[in-house]
Image (cartoon, rainbow, N blue to C red; front, top):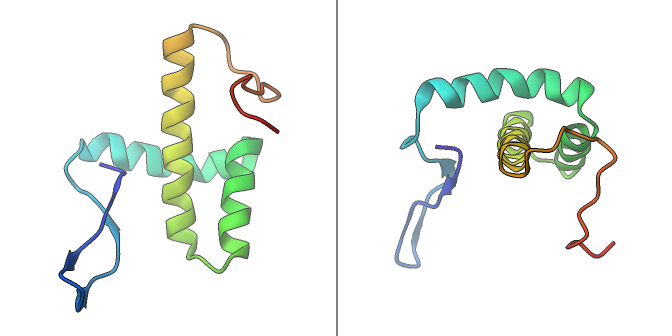
Length: 95
């Protein structure tokens, strides 16, 4: 339920992109509330939040992006079985 959905009909009618409401609402609400603390204490989430706000995006949009980041981090931890390391860098990403 955190994925963006584009509301568009042809080339003339374009609505603002919003998040889809198809997922679990309680999980979405919980992730949104967790995103406030993640912006304070999680370096990766703080970087995303500050980068988007500096670009001129709304703070709420930046918090939704932090929710997505938290969800991806939680899934990666569950899938790999490793503990969370804030200094971890993937070997697949070229820096």
